[in-house]
Image (cartoon, rainbow, N blue to C red; front, side):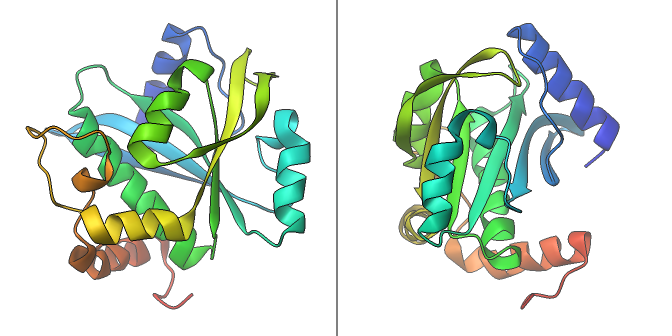
Length: 199
């Protein structure tokens, strides 16, 4: 992904809602439509501190004590005219694969504005953890949500690739790639990020 284009998209979309950008992600995936960057999602590997620790350190601390290997999804941005379901599903599928196969993450966490929590519950099966807090990094209220990677992968195995953009569905998983396409996706990730498929 073009770093400058990705940063410009995130800054514009966050500023349009009065948010500030937090620290950069470790890896940012970008989706292009007709040659134009239309959406991004960032992921961070847990090295003892994640962005969500600013507001939800107790909750993340409990997860770590349970032995969970965390990965944080962050900095989601999309152009208003993007083909949203297909774009978001593609981004999240690549992010799942990178987190699970390269970082060995088994639990995903994300901070979202409370008005978006229903979307993540319905569309991606994320669960709420704890009460609403002020996210000091972006200056807006936030809730912590999480998803077991294995639960996400099971949804992918069962539903991935079963619906196109013109269909109707209350979940994003049918818009993900098919399970039998994952080896090709992993090869693309390995080529871009320079790791072996068994790393």
